[in-house]
Length: 115
Image 1 (cartoon, rainbow, N blue to C red):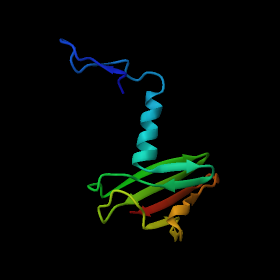
Image 2 (cartoon, helix red, strand yellow):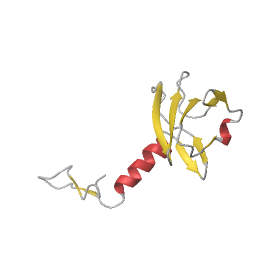
Image 3 (cartoon, rainbow, N blue to C red):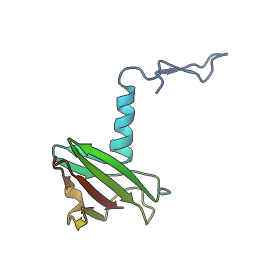
Image 4 (cartoon, rainbow, N blue to C red):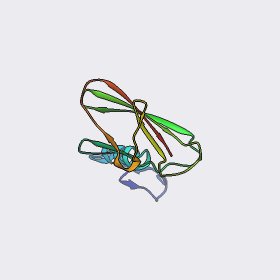
């Protein structure tokens, strides 16, 4: 993420001050939280993706303390957002909007989310 982009020859299009303090964190936050939709609030993980409809699915390994959550987001109906199904370790969670409760138990958990 460049802080400035030159518009005067011979440097037209070149960016300066790339990766200055904070830019990497903002890119990570934009990608993880606002595109892939993985948002943590306290001990709850919410899935609110906003993705291109061309993406059929994606996976993310999310670490919470000593625990890994394998998140698989499926998009069979080619939607850009929303959610119709959520499961944790093979068990359906009835209310998609309530998110996934996080525990730091050192185990590996699987989350399946369908748009």
